[in-house]
Length: 93
Length: 521
Image (cartoon, rainbow over all chains, first blue to last red; front, side):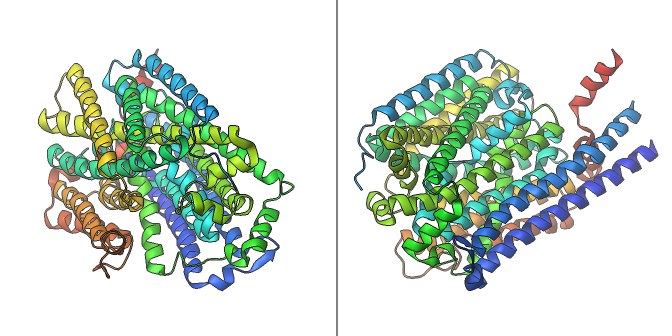
């Protein structure tokens, strides 16, 4: 009983750590982009190849980064997290 | 260019009627399956991950994001993209912090989660206050948008348009509850994603399927500045504040949160956010093409001539690349979009009124099932009438700021209390009340004092509060209020209940019994 409670606590802490890290990463990426828009107007206007400015590229990459962060979370949750939850439920009976 | 926009369009009317017939059929089918509150509020918790992903996307992709952002990009280029991106980055937050706890701890509303280990009545009242404020402002924005849009697209009068939207939406929710609402969202999401994709492909066909050639053509015609940041973000603090509201507001929108109760378990909730983020991200990437496509193929002057705000950019573009028939189709899709969003909003508002206020405050959590269902339907009618009335009262008003306001309240009133209640052991009833009320009231007051209302609407020369969106102050303020009040007035029972909450958060609640029974047999 006691080690089950301890295992749940460890799992909860790991979930919280990952959730906060990934949320922080999303904030850093998005607000980094917003601050670049505000302070680096010239830089973001740089044309890389005809039709593609650095700003448009980074903007699209912010969307892609949201997908990547979600993928990281889902990979962890579907494997490690779900496995631990299943074994905790098992032990509960 | 000459446009047939605003004249009765046979194809638009046919497509729209087909949509109404299809969704009413769905509603009739759903009504026969709506016998309990679990079916009315949560579609019997049988929605799959893909279905809920589409429905979430349907709830989220409003006409404002389809028509508004395409127009913004068409008229101001790169600056419009800042909005498309801001609306997406809230979804990872929903995934990491909100979706699974909500599914595992609550039943129908987000207040179920906040009130789980706290005193029911005070928390529910504060939560309903926040929820209903968000729903009301969001509804006003949608209804006024609906009136203007349908007027422009179909040539109907403003009042008729508002009344049609209100009555049809009411029929979905009243008879078919969450089952009908979910399927209307799915149909709408498929139509919107399909229509926008087709439009983008038709545009790109003129640029050998290379978006960069399209962007280059835009830069050639309107100068390289259209690909660079311009005037829209003149004050970085304003941009950061709006960004915070968009990012954390998504995780506090009652109609979005409610969707997580329609799936069978936390894992499906996770799957549904993954699908939703994929669809919504894809859609916002499409707005890059649609916006610049309209800029080049329709032209900024022609767009402004029809609507100075640029809202008709996408329909005009459809007419240029696909003729009157395609314009009709896109117009019908836009109408369907509004209908679906207001249906989702109304259902979540009805849940706050009936499940939170009536059942859990007035009846102290003990009301017969039949009565609960009756009150839920009564609340739906109330909100339907309210939304038509608000739509007509706010006719001709500039309501663009109201979506921002709804996001600001959602981010400040709902999100902090939700996160604190799930992840902070020492959170208390008074802390929750303080956080939710501080969030709602401070967001309302600061928006009132902001340049958006004071200068642009009331015509005053200056505004007491400098920012257009208050998120940067109100979100930390709501967190602070929750923490300080909880520390000042500790609540033993709330702390004791945390172990059970944590257990349920990770291992699930009522599901355990069913699963255990399944293995035993």
